Amino acid sequence: MKRLLSYLKPHIGVMITTSILVLLIIVVELYRPIIIGDAIDQYISAPNEVIGEIDVIRRHNFMGVLRAAAIYLGLLLSGFALNALNTWLLQKMGQQIIFHMREEVFTHIHSLSLNFFNTAPVGRLVTRVSNDTEAVNELFTTILVKLFKNSVKILGYAVVMLSIHVKMAFVSFALLPIVTVLTFFFRYISRKAYRITRNKITELNTFLSEHISGMKLIQIFAREKEKYKEFENKSEELFKANWREVMIFAIFRPSSYMLSVVAMILVIGTGSLAVLKGSMSLGTLFVFITYISSFFEPIQELAEQFGTLQSSLASAEKIFSILDEKPEIVNPANPIKPEIQGRIEFKHVWFAYENEDYILKDISFVIEPGQKVAFVGATGAGKTSILNLIGRYFDVQKGEILIDGVNIKEMDTDILRRAIGQVQQDVFIFTGDIKSNISLNNKEILFEDIKRAAEIVNADTFIEKMPEKYNSSVTERGSTLSAGQRQLLSFARTLAYNPAILVLDEATANIDTETEALITNALAKLMEGRTTIMVAHRLSTIQHADKIIVMHQGCIKEAGSHQELLQKNGLYKKLYDLQLT
Image (cartoon, rainbow, N blue to C red; front, side, top):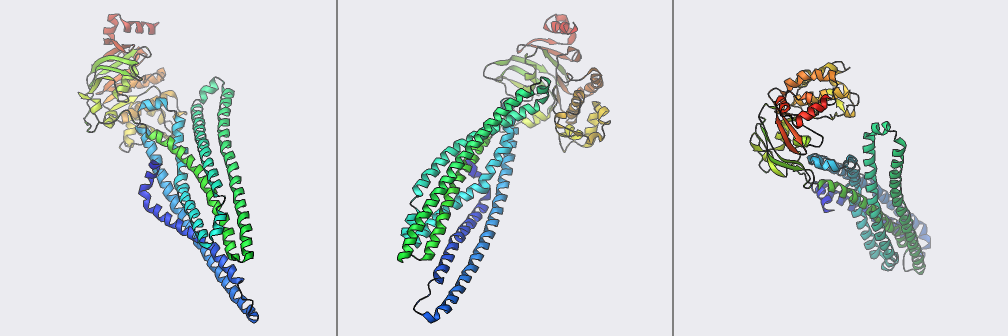
């Protein structure tokens, strides 16, 4: 709760203003019944002994009632204006807080290491940024102020009732202990219900995100009915969780209302006897009848607000669980910001994704600036892990990685990654247009740079045929483009950023023979003057490399040029022969 309240610090002036407005609203609400009560007492208090002047007295008292009505109307209008201003201030403040909170969560997610995204479902993260922040919005715009308002209102009613008539006040408070116990019980069970509901919403969103993304696979294997049943089960679990909340309210609200009715009966019965005995005026009884209904209303609201507060706190817990995740890769206190030339050196590197299950074991090699080096080996040999380590997406457990003689742990991570252009096998295309997918909305990359990059990698051959060319729209994941076209866009994107180090991770795996022929020349231009690291299963695509490093079970088994490795008649020769057969 303290962490949530810290978001209010920049808005302390608004909170003070709204608190003052709330107090004024309460004063208006407390004073309204007293105005009517006084008017009733004035109207029926004409002295019976002055028989001849009764009509004059009645007219005088009636004018007093009209004045009271005018004051009452003024109070109503004042209450409306105060409530409107209060609501406007709170909504504006709440939206500003949620805007900054949503930005903070999104920015923090971007700062987390890749290892986090290997275990965190996308649907859960989407729920945190969207659903949970909206649930917290209720806390700032409604709950906190209403909790304050209802607490002060209950206290105000109690003080005013005690000041008017002590005996009647204690009669009104007779059922208060029962209401208090009921409220705390409701708060306890509603908190558990809200937590279950938030978890079920997260599970459903995660399921939806996964299965909508994998819909093609579901249809390929004709698993629609089975997946529908899974969705039905999860949807039913959420239905039951929501129904549990509804039933809690369905029991609490009528129970509170019944107690307020019993309290009203006690007040009317006791007050009527007091009026008949002459120990209390009719106006005072009216005030107490009005107050007793108003007195239990904030108590009921308070309990419901505690329930909504539990929902907001449950959502806040989920949000803070993300914000509490610490990025594994952090910049040093005083990072080195070199002009990267492209010399890469691995010195006795050991690396594992989990514990001591090492993927790379005592890896050492040197790549000179401008060299073209390829890594080959069976699946799981550790080739892609080497590429991930160069960009420092993970940190090594032993040894060190140097670029231009500087340990990458001492470098500014942004500068390091900007110097590395990586083309992956699975190309991700964002919703937008062609040019934004090449530049990634980088303002420093001009349209001329985008077009030049596309021309060099021959991506312009299909872009120029599109209706709006570089402004042509593309859908999520580039579903309207072929695999080859997506890969060509990836090449153009990499070239537009002009990296010093080029990383090709199975970059031609999804490209047909005709498209591969298109980019062979482009690749030569792309690699010119750049340190290039290639990973490929098709050995025919890396025969031109200056050096080929053969990996096996996390170790370097062989290294040399294509011809040198064939002459060694070792592991590389076996891999090469297997692809020829």
